[in-house]
Amino acid sequence: MMAAQSRNSKRLLAIAVLCFTAAIAHAGDSFTWVTKAINPLQRFEAVGGAANGKLYQFSGYYTVGKSILATPLCHSYDPAADKWSRLADIPHAISHCGQVADTDQASNSIFWLAGGFLGDHPGPSTTEVWKYNLNNNTWSSGPPLPAPRAGGALVKLGRILHYFGGTIRTNGVYQQDYGTHWTLNLDNPTAWQTTTSGFQLLAALPNPRNHMGGTALNGKIYAIGGQHLGNQDTTAQNEVDAYDPATNQWTQVAPMPRPIGHVTANVFVRNGRIVVTSGAGNSKTKLPNVIEYDPATNTWAELPPLPDGRQSPVSGLIGTQIVVTCGLKGGLHNQTWVTQTAALTQAVSSFTLINADTDQPVPGYETINDGAVINSASLPTTHLNIVANSSPAIVGSVRFGFDANPNARTESNAPYALFGNNGSDYNAGTIGAGNHTLTGTPYTNKSAGGTAGTPLTISFTIQ
Image (cartoon, rainbow, N blue to C red; front, side, top):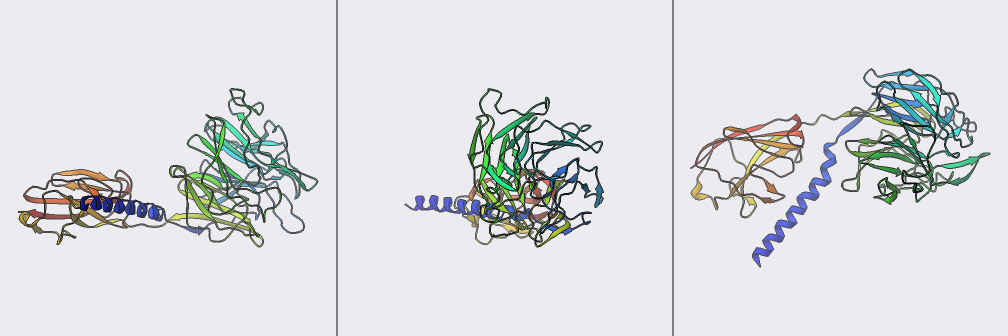
């Protein structure tokens, strides 16, 4: 019975450690928002995103109120120089396009814009497709969509573009949302296809909607949030759907923490996760929302929010920095917010001697002091381990140096144990009699990657 209770206690402790690790895993992903060079034109419902080290912003609305006017002006932002630059005007002022960059060919990088609302609000849905060449600052037309759409998502997966969802508006009235799904082969971009390579009809988005976001990750495409028709204040969606081209099927994954629409230009991939910035919620809420989805765990997590709520800005990831510009809240804005990684000092603060039979600290050696002399006859067991305690409690990894081996072991998951462990179940090691030197060095990334923190070295003697 006592053995069973001990095993159960170990399991519960291991679960607690895992839950604690998961709960604070994002705490290390710490950044702050700083304000940079203002955008030359305040606007919202523009389209664009990040490509080749810059944030691109195309067209959109530059007035608000009774008269909502569209602009053909386009700009790019270089965070390295903290500078905005004027680009060639788009041939037709537009908003609510699906957009994605194809930068596979460095000498011929193209930003694709598909569908959208033409001209001033409330303009009609269109079949227009525009291509902006990042290399020579020119516009050209692409193959039109099979039918008018606006507020749908455009995603690049491999060499295939996927357009899905969206709505039709004519004479200022929303007619219908669609889940239709079309593809375009970038190596032969002559016409959009409605079927797979096996001639199956491309699976339609199960919940037709507009003003959604989309992106691709790990071989799948994702449809994120959105709204129904023009009812942005009452029908914002938290639904997230994943499409697998191998099966031609959509599957719902974990919903967002809150309903969010107006994120067409605010969804992107960062560190293997999907990030959503800003958005419009129900009841006319303009959100400072910054969240990320981890497909490995099918969970969402909160990131440091924007300094203020915004509807329909343009955002993207440039290097390690998120950039968010413009948007609507109580009026139009032309701010440029950029993330700045918070300084994080990591250190190994102490070492603890562990009884590997009970998986508990050896009394009197919760902290092994430098110069400690340990009488082996006083120890409850010869099955020992040593844990490195870090500040903060969770770091990327810890590398151990022991005696003459500077790379005795690297641990990428807490607790960090010299002889290894499975959660709170510690492996038994042997520490022979004599003098020993132990060093623990924390790193920001797993497997002793990233930046090294402050190490701790102690010497001790086993008698």
